[in-house]
Image (cartoon, rainbow, N blue to C red; front, side, top):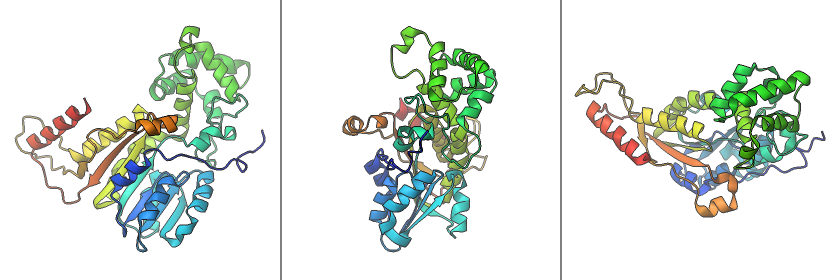
Length: 342
């Protein structure tokens, strides 16, 4: 296939842009990290609010994003630093820059519009000739093709069930194995055909594209997206200076659940039995959740950008000097949290 990456400009509409930057409570002299730089939309807005002493560190593992954001943010000179890396290594990146703490961190999770709309990247099921790639970091050796053709049927079933939440996961895994026994599955068209064969026609006629959930599952497995998120959240909260904020935009329930639970645990870490009148476990709150309910895009934004419909923003504020909280008070806070989500 012709390499069209250089012909197609990196285009990505930043979801919940105003709400996210407002949630950061940007200080002109602050240090901020955009852990998923993408096209640089959130970073550009943050940089426009920084004074000469402010800094922004943009991190992304996608080479195309690094190149595009570098051009977009060029006018801001030395106030920005761009690093090609996975945000899971944020602490190391900042350590190498001599930075111990920051005033805010942004993560805009999921796939960019550019990645979805560029068939060469292999994220799309809409182009039958697209390769099965799906790597967010093209330096990685393994691709989606390796998962589709190399995973055992039980493992395919597991990831489609857990990461795609598809009720036909078992049947889809079986059809993929049957198809690859005839020849390796190499294109989006071949994979989609196997998926469609596993789903009843009456179901395919309803709702979205039948391959959407399976593609999501394979992409998450390949790039270890949920593992990276789960293992990085505590480190990012620890990096925040007093009053610093972590803003995370998620696009499906699996991501959102991880963020919600991590924020709740960092606000209310006590593990003492309910019968204890006073906390004896010694765990201290690391801050507070700003968003008792997630912030979602306005109807106007959803109309302009359909991909924003599933977005949710959650915000955590760091308090390094948080005092020990009595168990009863922590549980009251937890009950308030749960009530807010009902």
